[in-house]
Length: 181
Image (cartoon, rainbow, N blue to C red; front, side):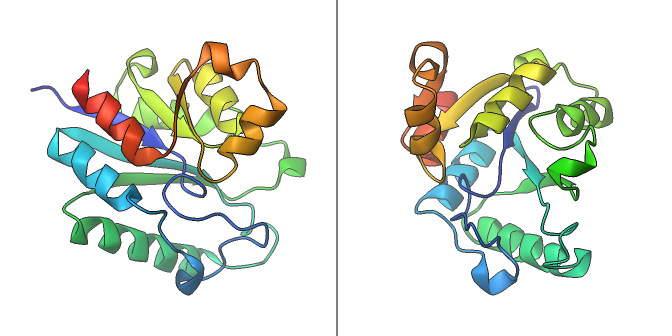
């Protein structure tokens, strides 16, 4: 079977989000069944790639070494469940930096597509915020919204999304849908 990819936002999809930012490995806490969801996707030949904004770097809340430690913890937790995270792309900038890599822009998705020589129109991107949906659409990927993290608020603030998106309670429900297709 040909490799299939799935793109995931991190905070609010895989782990609990925080308005104060996830600044240390101790603050990184997985959402219930999110690690099992990644393992399920991996078991069904999906290659999982994380696309995440990490403006805490630009804000000086943590450094890249700490971010790597957070990601090491996440990868280890996923591997303990039998899953794998292929690659993590992150934007280190703040919105005021006007970079191309910060979601809602599609720079990180386009970089992934170039690195892996894939067509984004065949790939789903699962997120919990409007900027995730916008980045997916801007890059040509298929957006999926989960209600964890900021997902419920995103739907409340943007009711038109109900008619135009696949929406799931959480990453595990989205994963079950994707493997059943």
